[in-house]
Length: 174
Image (cartoon, rainbow, N blue to C red):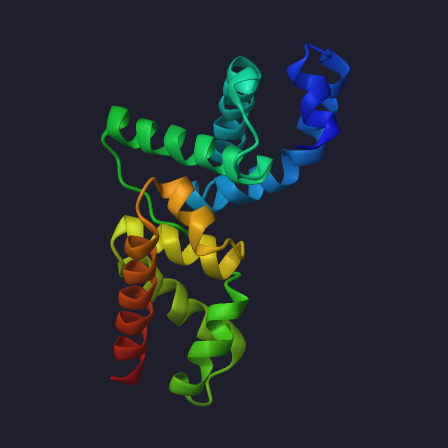
């Protein structure tokens, strides 16, 4: 486990502030990918870091701190959507790995058009499938890490990724 996390767990406020500063940008990217709004993303990570502070002593280091933080952000986002009964799409402008895989099926459209097409296709996917695709293709998490974050089995992650990729490829070939 990271020494900074250990110091923060022992009650070192400066270490916690350093932890927030170190992970703020990645948390903001994660939250923005979910909300599509910078203001909402900032609100979301502020609440996430409050939860991190509150529950840091329960973090055992079984997954990376980044995975644990993403899980907190994702759970807060889900809670907000349930509470406010609103649906948001995940803006996925920067899915480079998936773009490489899909670009062969798209033909000769330029990269910006390709990004828009892939983004539209990803937004059509069911939420859990979209989140699994985002975690794998954008953040590069392993199947096990995605399984921990989404609280589903590794087989379920594999299935969601397979189905998501297949649906996108089918839609792009039409």
